[in-house]
Image 1: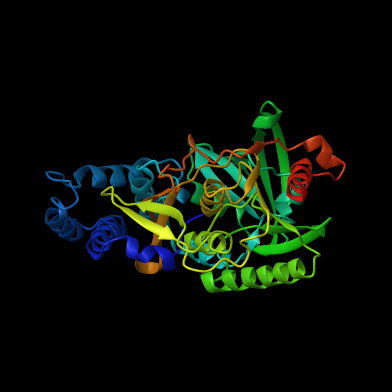
Image 2: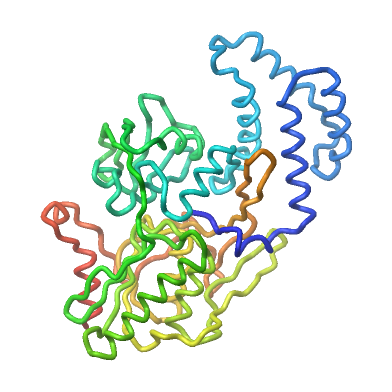
Length: 417
């Protein structure tokens, strides 16, 4: 999941925004039509931005040659719509960076994304990402159609409705999977944990409205808080939900009902960077460094807590797994390095970059990586360098069939101790 506009807009200079917007606008003109006068205008624009975009000496003859040959010769004319060529060419430019987190969203994808930020949309309910040009299930959401159909974190999606999706971008695959509630989508997956066994899943889409967090249970004096994501419709809405849970825990701690706490971040794909800072601020002393953000120039910005912690004295365990990503890793890593919590579970996903969202003409948007996230010791979180729990314990899928959660049981045992 990406850092949102509230915390990211300041990360990029006005000149960079203008440059990106001009360049994307330029490509929009290129694909919008093939009239000779328009080509002249395009080449004039190109000459003006050649130096700034490091395309010195380039013209767009090759681009137009390719465009015209496709229109003249490609066997399936139904695929040769102007919109598909237009948006496809922009996507190709962005995807050439080989950064799954940097993506161009067309107007429909942008609209779907805006709806899903608050956790409400129609689909199967799963977070996807791209690793080595494969579509990976980062986390199916709790109680979602994806969970009910048997989709698991770590599954590799190979086909959607019979269409091969290997090598496709994640936004394109998401658009294939999304659809109206009540309709079905056939998804073929390979499951690495079962020696790449092939599964054919038929999933009935639903209205996805998973809560961002909940106080799931209190057992033997241990409160278990499940945080599904660090997003809501706004950062303020997320904070409001956390404040309600925190105050409930404080009240139960005073009455003696709660003596320790588990924060379950398994399957949490992240969200607002600031939400991770806010959450950590309730556990560690004011002024504690939670993260650094390193920009393209190598400069680091420090992010520290600014509040007095309400839960500073409650023993805490944090549950993580391979689907805990982004803001989840910032929080978990900071708690671990501050020696404020014991981490239990498996290695995290390893996503330590921050994105901003740049609105573009026609309702499109550009999600672009602008910084790296570093832990308090200035270690960069990535796929090769994820968060490693203090107590590593693999999830027991056989026990799951019997309704047992061995990782949670281990966390409760540690929290009680």
